[in-house]
Image (cartoon, rainbow, N blue to C red; front, side, top):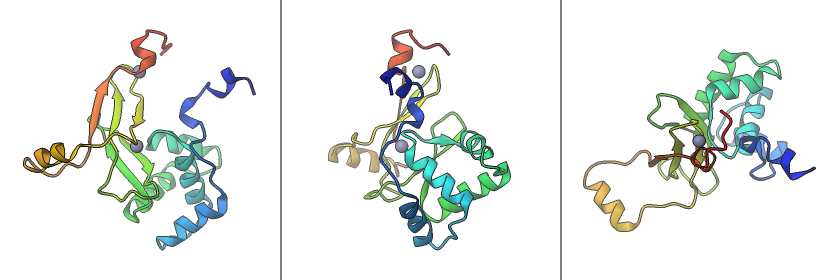
Length: 161
Ligand SMILES: [Zn+2]
Ligand SMILES: [Zn+2]
């Protein structure tokens, strides 16, 4: 595949390979039934490199004949069960992502929100230093670390949307 085609939609670029069996196991491990709709949802979020909104998830699941209400219910069920994390990054839109192995719900990674195109990126390796953590704990409990700015596409003015 030429690189231009592969990079066309970076949101759906494979983050890491994920077999159907391991996805089923993950859903069953939290006590939920591994229905085809849940399977498709978790598989999609595992392969996404950034959190997806309910609308984006529902739109892609609709291709498999899953209705919007079911898509939304499954996202909430899997969030409550601890498989997914729901984030709100100051734009009043809930986005969902898989809680990655080695993370727990309280150990979230920072996100970067582009204020021009609305793209959200995970900053997996960015952490608060110990002294930053102490300083924030003196103020309250941190539930989300958010960086806002212009993504590289918007910064260089090459974005087409
Ligand atoms: Zn942007
Ligand atoms: Zn993330």
